[in-house]
Image 1 (cartoon, rainbow, N blue to C red):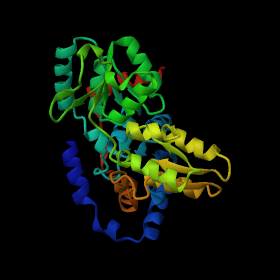
Image 2: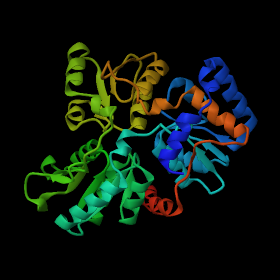
Image 3: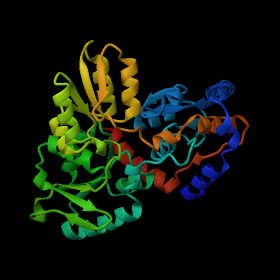
Image 4: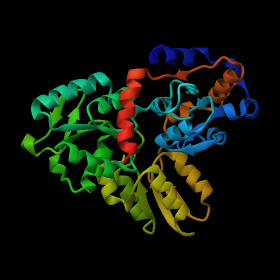
Length: 366
């Protein structure tokens, strides 16, 4: 079944009864299903999930962390409360006798969707024609299984926001240049931190199928895919300037998926884990403006009442695709498992899985 067919099935077949149930009834149904399924069930929940969903997670974390925890559990059923590419990674890393499900197939990722395999193969052909066999592909884990497989097949590796500097350093020992997919901002911020000047970074536009660069092609060190996170893209220089003016005592911490100019003006930048740990370890009474997804910011506010915390962008909305996972869809997914009629399985084919695993293992062994 194709992703499009699965999407149509998820949208059209969720029984109206689940959508009409009260939150209290849904929560009771979910808890009953968890109790009945017992150790056969594992629910990983991404940090960006809603509070009422994350409350039922057996583990919460970032995408790769949760996929690895899924592989470590003996549970037969993995109900992934995240987005599609995360569930794919979990399916790649788990055993054949484990099954991964996504409560709502509409839970995708706009960043991952900005780099499809057809676009990537076109880009690779064009770029290698221009620059020869001098490029190593790398992909952020926030990408589809097909992109991870492409990178694995061509000798490259995946990266997270936590280890991007070390992985990019490794990549530059393998080839003269890097093609970094799909988030240009993480790639640019990381390369800049490693001392690569902006003048040596090009951008590949997959829509126009063109390389954006002014200068001698021989000077290019990093080719950035023209993609971005639709959440982190919305933090701006104006947001930083407003916080500086209204809250001069605040420390500004942002995710490296933010634009270069926002990161440059902030006090700190790091992965979701880095942001969480920094806030948790901060002294009581400290003040923070955080540039990341709103569900997480709200949770950090609730869990750290001894600190003054705000969102860097006061008008920021939660990640829309993450919010596709809600109580009705989680209840439907678990109830279907309890009845022996599972819905929304996530299955990566063997070849794609093997090649994607190569990219993941090159990262995990470093």
